Amino acid sequence: MKLTTIVAAAVAATTLAACQTVPDEPARANAGLTATQGNRAFGEATFEEAGKKVRVIVFAQGLRPDQEHSMLIYTGAACGADGMAAGATRHPGVLPSLKAGKDGRAKIDVEVDGLSIGGGAANIIGRTIVVHAGPEAQPAGKPSARLACGVIKAG
Image (cartoon, rainbow, N blue to C red; front, side):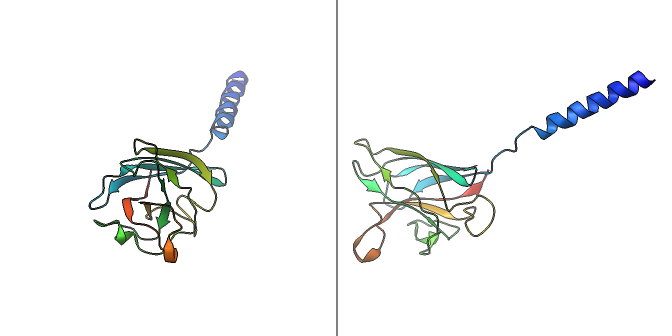
């Protein structure tokens, strides 16, 4: 009887120790980028927590060849046909620009500060990601036309 109790206790302790070493899955989010009216750009954006940063991977095509395209996150929760339903208020997180190749395709894979998935003021769930026609710095401080837009969803 004592041997059975000792073996059972050892198995229970081993099982509990194994459960404690299984890492939690990082929070993830994604957005399908669809072309705004009159444009051909489309793609996908994925977001994954990476410690205190968020890893951002964006694939896009149908962009203007050999051009820089700014990407901004807006506080709106929809895109609309022209992307303007995303709103005018920018999320505080900063994303790098996409640089399209000769084929109009671009990819980035970076870790950025200032974003969070699922909590706090920097939360991106329910926000929109917009790919613009050109670099962010435009005359009068206005971003360029919106080529593609997607709502960021958990998962």
